[in-house]
Image (cartoon, rainbow, N blue to C red; front, side):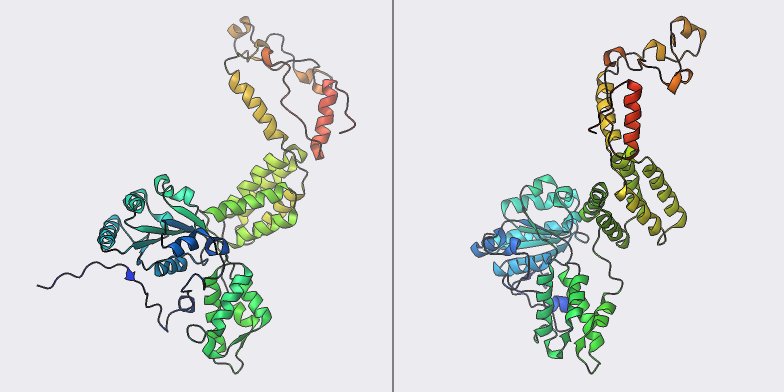
Length: 449
């Protein structure tokens, strides 16, 4: 009887690496921390990760960063440098049964003196049951967990697991790092494109670096596609046209359910509130071109029209609602015209948050005095019986008075009679409204305003 081959989801270092027919991004994958480009704060001298590797005492970590910043590569490098068994798992494809099997083999390997690194890509997709399986073994050292995620771990990873790992923040690669990656691929004859004799126009190099949007994998993929165009030409120089074609239809990274979504809309709203039309248009375009739901953007503009423009320009709310109706009627892509118009109007409009601030002041008293009855003269006298009990007695309609206003009239409960919730702003229409209010109240105008 032939013994069943043990389950081997991982590999023992050294990793044979990608073959000659593998994509350029796979072939150029760094093999050591010294080859790893960028992310100095995460892997540079004195960093937690580098110190842990040098001491061969690696804690469980979660690598958090955008696509193409080197999360998977970094996990493989770390495993190789501490001579650990590396088990790559996908959070999408791995179930609880497979996790238990991986942990059991890791326990056996630990007895034999070898550590196991379990690398879980897209760990934010692990459900609670899957995370619960991993938790005790990451805690007792049976495995070293390295998770990779593009999403904020504090929202996606259960608190007990998050408290037992270190979160290492990675960022999109800057232009200098991307340029080094591209140059290395062009010159490396063993793993890269060095044997083809290709060169890259300076302007084409800039276009490639900018178009990669901080994604090293995207930069190498674009370079490989462009190189394919140039191979059959007498000239071996990659041009702007080559890079432009290779970048065609590539959308910037944007996840409508993650941090980028919330961070970008936050930047947009803050730019509108800060009356910066250029920044407002930039963030609007970035969301639209990334495929954001236009109605989500417009909902935020409608809110801002009331919250931040308010009575300084009441027309802003009407325009924002009209924008929603126009985009719903026209659709995209032409709907961006109405969105850009609304965006610019809101950015340039005078600002006032008096409506919201006044409401919150009134809300505090409304909650505290919800037991106080409505004054009799303000009650609705719908029947004769109500009138007999004094409902509506002594009420005077403002329309019967000069200026449609009754000096000294009271509309609040007696205990709140001197309250002033509304504090007018000083810009736009609201300045006129504030002046009218002061005149009706018989207050002196403050000319310093």
